[in-house]
Image 1 (cartoon, helix red, strand yellow):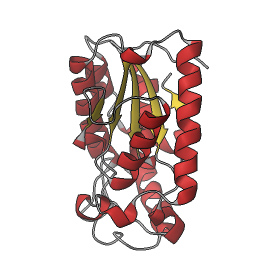
Image 2: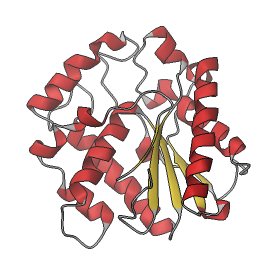
Image 3: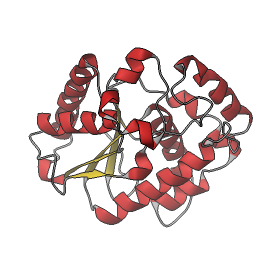
Image 4: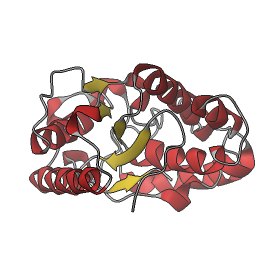
Length: 224
């Protein structure tokens, strides 16, 4: 499936490969813990990232996009940085270069101290809260509305920095399903820019529906 140009660039999203926290069934959502090397990809996740890179390369070819127009933007967490570096290797792009950019606003959703380093079996409790009131986050954590607001800032940065590029956004499950949801809504909005239209999508009827766009680990999708 081709991506659709809805802003100045074409966008794809990639959820990080299976990570050590995924294997251990742990919520690792704070910046302090997320950047630790012990929470990077598991061996299976490295393989998933490599497969995603190969799929992305094929989609670039299908869309007649040259590698010099590719940009990889990624969350600072170790599992996303690891994923992005594997994809860059598959594409034969230098990871330390202007083509690869860490954007802090792409970080994992912070689920708060009650859930941090606890079992990921708790996720459904948070998603139920999102459906009920997406402006209310778990205690000490981010709401769906909070996450979409900073994702709009990330998109604004990419739209400002890049022109007619193929942008791969490497992030996490909740942020990426929210980003897809916001993109879907943004297409229906009228505004001067993509980031502005995403901000206009921060309404309860939209924000509460993000679970419809859930991704598996290592899953690549064009934003449409």
